[in-house]
Image (cartoon, rainbow, N blue to C red):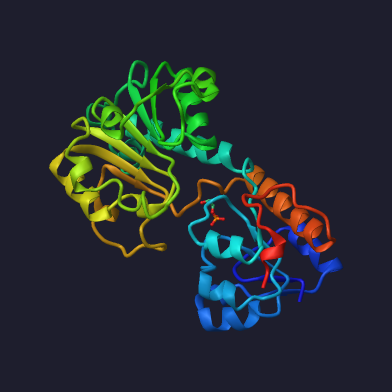
Length: 323
Ligand code: 3PG
């Protein structure tokens, strides 16, 4: 088998691969690790979104695997060190969805600031409640951008256009990084420094052991009271029970979440809060981003299977390490 597809992937660029290669596609395979291990054993490449867990155990069952095509940019479902050890190239379309994700994050900022869901609900139910729909201007406000990669930088650019001040926090970005001058953001040396003054906190950090529950009870206690939290990165970066407490106490003024600790989530407190906006992990779901993403990954899978190097990848595994 040339290509295993273990969750729902459907695009013309993926279907075209079927004209040239032997493709096995099973949209439910990700749910069953034992069946996944059996199927991946005979695969040269695998294409996934974020549901298939490519753990060290699963990858160990794939001796012929030369490439993983990740149709998206989050890598928390792939054991990168196992992929490196096995000489597996991980294809990731790094630039493909940054604009879409940043646009949704900024859309959330505007939506929270102007209470759009409340205005919509109230007006549709026959109300004309202008007083309770009074919002705040973005001009002059501060946004803390936690994670200053491709997406965070775009959010900073949008913020500048709205007259906001952007303060970036990212342990991998240095004071002399050109990204700061390009976006007009200033760099905080600690997360606390950014959160103490931010009216909006937009999270763009990958989920790693270091960032898991980075936004927890202690941290929420140190934000500027009434700040808004926007998360379009990974749900696990935020401790949801601590978030509920911070929203209930008024320490946070509201939140907008595209991602959750468990997806789909268990319907509970956040779903019942008026100052919370929720979406089903759709930040990258625009026609443009999806087309770019699928095309970048499909063309690299094609290159790899034809013996050529991939163009979009995040690791340089040494093939000689293959067992
Ligand atoms: C990403 O990691 O690029 C986005 O979260 C989208 O992920 P998805 O491929 O699971 O939709």
